[in-house]
Structure formats: C-alpha cells, structure tokens
Image (cartoon, rainbow, N blue to C red):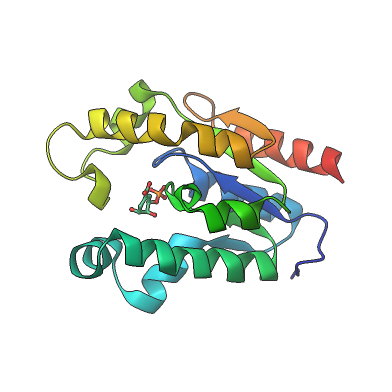
Length: 172
Ligand code: S3P
C-alpha cells in the first residue's frame, strides 16, 4: 500500500454530496494506493453519524474527525473528508502540507443526490436550501486548503477521476 512519504497522497474536500467518496475510490484505484474515507472510519469506531450528532453534539464529531484526518494523513493514499472537516482550523492546518482537490457540485445536481439522505445537517425542511447556505459558509475554507477545483455536477465520475489523476501526477 502506501505511507505518508508516498508521493501520490491526495485529499478530496468539498460540500456534502459532491462525490468525494465515489470519485476518491476511483482515483485511488487508478493510482494504485489505498482509499480512506474519514467518515467511514468514524462510523466504524463510534457508530452512525446522526447518532453522534444527536447524542454528543457536532463539536464532538469535529473532534473525532480531526483525529481521523490526522491518522489518515499519516497513512497516506487517497483520502476523502466529510464536507465539514474544513471548518476546524486545526484540520485546515494539517491539510496545508498535502495536495488537496476541491470537488464542487451545483444545486441542480445536488437535489437528486441528497434526496432521502440521513445527513444530520440537512435534516428538516428544504435540504437543498440548507445545503446551499452551508456550502456558501464554507466555500472560502475549501478554496484556502485546495490547489485545484473539479466540478462533479454533470460528467461521469470516472472522467472526473481521470482528470484528478492527471492533475495529481503533474504535481509530483
Ligand atoms: C458533514 C458532511 C458529511 C458528514 C457529516 C457532516 C458536513 O460528510 O461528515 O454528516 O458537516 O458537511 P459528506 O460530505 O460525505 O456528506
């Protein structure tokens, strides 16, 4: 597999439902490195995200997320972060030493992707409006940590993954 010194380590950030997991898995396969989804790791160790938010609060989730991001970066590979990871200054600081790609998606495409979703921050009425507001609040942080942006709204995920692989290889 790979480790922190691996020149192909790459981090994906972006709003909820930007395709970070599906694109990330494909990019990792193409680069021949491991794929880490920090949300999945948090769930494996602590249980479902809606329960963590409901029982321990968002601040606790962010604390678990910072630890998961730190561990993942130490291991290396392609790493997908939850949409809110960039809200923590300590997490943004960790990302500064790494190649980070920002995945964007427009509101038309996101409406289909978040239908019936269980994300606690989109619970309640009008999830698309919530999604838009949260994305706007965070847009500056994504731009701060990332050095390239890829829009996932329309194209097949494999094509986006291929573009990210090409970009990452240019960075070496
Ligand atoms: C969150 C995004 C989610 C997950 C949690 C909080 C956020 O991940 O980490 O529900 O604050 O944007 P995805 O971006 O994979 O949906």
